[in-house]
Image (cartoon, rainbow, N blue to C red; front, side):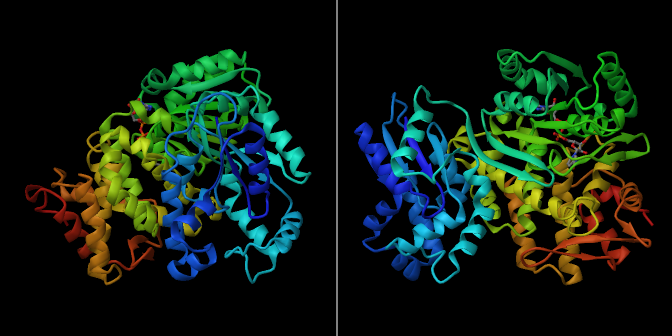
Amino acid sequence: MDIVLIGLPGSGKSAVGRRLAGRHGAPFIDLDEAIQREAGARIPEIFADEGEAGFRARERAVIAALGEPDAGPGVRRVIAPGGGAIVDPRNRWRLFQGRVPVWLDSRPEVLAQRLRRSPTIRPLIAGRDPIRAIRDLTAARGRFYSAATRIASVAEVASVVDAVDGLVAGMSASSATTLLRAETSIGRIVIGSGIAGRLLTDELRRLGATRAVVLTEPGAWGAVGAAIRDELGAAGLPLELVELPQGEAAKTLAVVEGAMRELARRRVERPEPLVAVGGGAVGDTAGFIAATYLRGVPFIQVPTTLVAQIDSSIGGKTGVDLPEGKNLVGAFHQPASIIIDIALLASLPERERRAALGEAVKMAALGDERLFELLEARGEAIASGDPAAVADGSVAELVERCAWAKVEVVAADEKEAAVRIALNLGHSLGHAFEAAGGYRDLRHGEAVAFGLRAACRIGVAAGVTPPERAARIERLLDNLGLGRGLLPYPLQSVLDALGADKKHRAGHLRWVLPSAAGHVVRDDIDAALVRDVAAGLLEPSQVGGAA
Ligand SMILES: NC(=O)c1ccc[n+]([C@@H]2O[C@H](COP(=O)([O-])OP(=O)(O)OC[C@H]3O[C@@H](n4cnc5c(N)ncnc54)[C@H](O)[C@@H]3O)[C@@H](O)[C@H]2O)c1
């Protein structure tokens, strides 16, 4: 097996790596050294000549050059990337898959002392108070390091090597890869591939559960249930399934009542956790049940659709629909943990996958340039389910960037009092189109794509969106086959639905509109402009007569 040693500068990756490799007669690959060899220059010089971007490009190249992991028994290679290499989701995907990542962790004081003695200049730390710099790096990178197995690196090199050896002994290469693990104010979030069953078992145990009470629906469970059932069974946790209807039909008060009565019959007690395995419909409904059954029980989200992994499972908004409208009943209830396993997406139909990218384009338009570039380069491959988009880490990167962007926005504003409104970019007219189609025609992300086009056009006309920014967003939607053609809904129905939008304040709809590299919120958009833009997205025969 390949061992990958990660950790902050000064954590001992080189010293431990050399000794470990020597003990096993295996090669030690120091990726920073490989970069310097390739470049014929020292790292500070590369930073000075090519900037951090140039250095990171070189880093990606040496990681890609590692090739396939060596899955043979014992320690085959010891690899030590630079401290920042694992910030890039694609690097983590390439480095961790099929290998054993080990995090050498030390206290900032210890690291600072080692760095003071070290002859190597570290560009991200040079010229700063080392303890402060290390604390900042730990805060920024902790979620990436925590994906690996942690070994305390305070002892002598030989004992750290012993500890790594002890960890690796008896281990065989696993198809499960953890890419990110974070403790946040909105729950524990873990992203990986092939992790769902094992991690769910661990989380249930952590929460003191003696059985797994899983709310799901036939589509999701049929696709992903077997692996989860097997892991729970192996761990001796009895599985109790509560089946909800498939799709939006789950989101009714009648279904909530039926499921709650089932829980009561099974004597589910506080604080037994409930588990949601499914897409956004299951997550919203099960989350609402968890928020209100016995006045609230803990809740674990295992999202199985792309929409749920990048959006709906994060943020604690739970709820169901009424005949009068969507999501009219609900509660904020944060899950204890969210287990995002991209391997569960393999069976997802193309339409679901593509539609979800409507939300991803929104996230990119809100200012994530790297996500924008990823969607431009690999969006079509992701949408069409091309296995190469999984293999090269594009899917992992997409899910992580979108999910983490949502975590950051929601953690800053859980109850949508301020910045969280940004997430509504494209949603005002998007929801109105969805409603006009009776929630049957358009998938949510497809409606958002039309809404995004509308927001771009309103933004340009109102002078807040630079035309080239709007053109770039619309071009990306074109290339992904989203929001194309004209919708067959009466303009008046769309305008009526818009009038019922929840984001009104003092009678004015608050529009989130794209700006040069982010968004602005405006409540003074002229109704005639909105009408014209909406009309431009509808079939001409549907436009006459609307007030
Ligand atoms: N709470 C929030 O913040 C939030 C955000 C966005 C959307 N939502 C809600 O999410 C819902 C839409 O979620 P969705 O798009 O996931 O739809 P969904 O839950 O209805 O799932 C879509 C379809 O995919 C199937 N499916 C699920 N997992 C599968 C898998 N792994 N393989 C194959 N098929 C699978 C389902 O059976 C279903 O037919 C809407 O109700 C929307 O309002 C909520």
